[in-house]
Length: 241
Image (cartoon, rainbow, N blue to C red; front, side, top):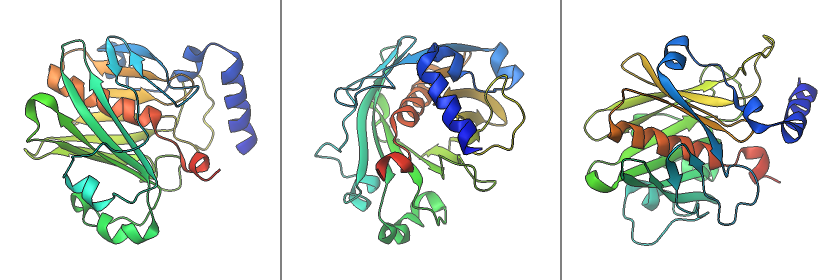
């Protein structure tokens, strides 16, 4: 199975990236969304900027800026892998994104109270999204074991704000046209709200973002920020090299 994954990634370097970003999404989402190939995901990390459709990030910084007092920054300030950037939308909305993709085992005790989840994995991706126009209502998100399918919770998680709004995150382990092998890797993530699929992001190849067309601009901002964060995060095999 590992040989198949290596071959898939090798072919992705030789053929057009859009071919290798076609994750399997629901028919309902496919019929009611805009699919936007991403740019900037692969290549040098210095000065990295992610673009898809009319959405764009600032340069992705592999650290956190000074001046933030939110719980995530205070609790995980010593984390080794950090991300921060701003997300911009075609509707002139923006938000700040701060995330962590690697932390010490000693941080798990703190992490167990984060968003009310009890966690046992160091390989968990968490972060905060702070809308510019609603900065008193940040969104917090987490994805448990986002790289490899080890159990039913692999690649799954949630984003929620202080008002009680929630977005469910689930790992997508199949590519379009791929045989039904036993899944071993997460190729993307689907987003749902109230039982309805509202978006998805592929992290294969150059990446691709799918946003449902009838979403309000504020929700599209949060989904765009989540998508960008998941596309630029480094998996555990990369950070351990």
